[in-house]
Length: 144
Image 1 (spheres, helix red, strand yellow):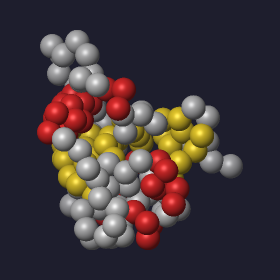
Image 2 (cartoon, rainbow, N blue to C red):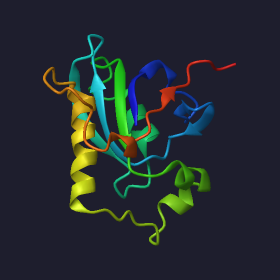
Image 3 (cartoon, rainbow, N blue to C red):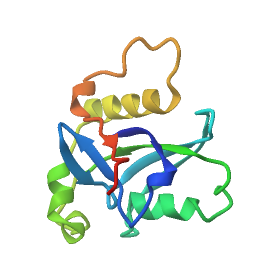
Image 4 (tube, rainbow, N blue to C red):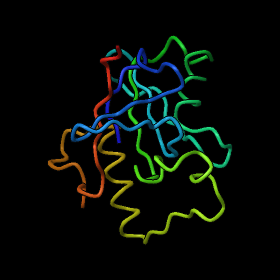
């Protein structure tokens, strides 16, 4: 996941995240994303890569040019594909053989963590059950 990334770094068809010193491109990640205005208020929630063979970058880029273009500054995303899958490439991710298998408890934990990350409710003392299942990537902002 990536929390509160800035839209100005949606460039060159890449969404670069950094975790433990390693860079990963999340452009083709599939999952759920939230758009926030400049005051960090959630203004829109959507999904990316649900069979349309685009992905996170494409959906966010669309929102820089559609009716939402002037209404958001930051975004958070919660992806379903592992970093290893993303590194194997676009064709691997969208192949019919690659299916995500999970159980209801794991899915609820992921959904809870996503919603807490999006809404940041004041009364939640933790970020969700088994939050260690999710790695948080920082947005790369230093492009040279």
